[in-house]
Length: 114
Ligand code: 5GP
Ligand code: ZN
Image (spheres, rainbow, N blue to C red):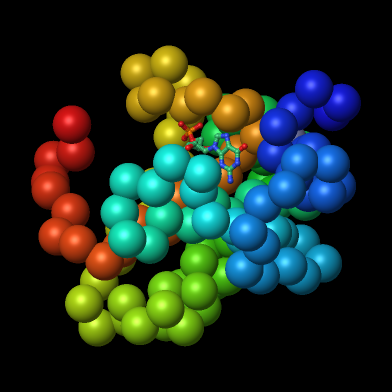
């Protein structure tokens, strides 16, 4: 997807502070962090929204969650806790249309979210 911001980060065309990369996903710091830890985890394959997921993506989505938990543990948030968020479309505030998991941690997070 030539115009996709996160595809460009995946391909190294836009710089990002990469934390983790494997054969399925990439994790990097959010450019506008909403918490002391705010990491974005993307699948290497381009999928626009959660609505586009099929049963073929089950392993992919599980992989993202396991990778997020690994980063959270490495950053010392396992016991204190953290939040994983995947926004879908307008009402959830999705702005980049390449699915991604937000890992937020390092401060108390309100519930319900705004
Ligand atoms: P969404 O609102 O789609 O769920 O999340 C998109 C996230 O991508 C936002 O938290 C935003 O700050 C982050 N973001 C947007 N542009 C860039 C960028 O160029 N680099 C990085 N690292 N994050 C970005
Ligand atoms: Zn993309």
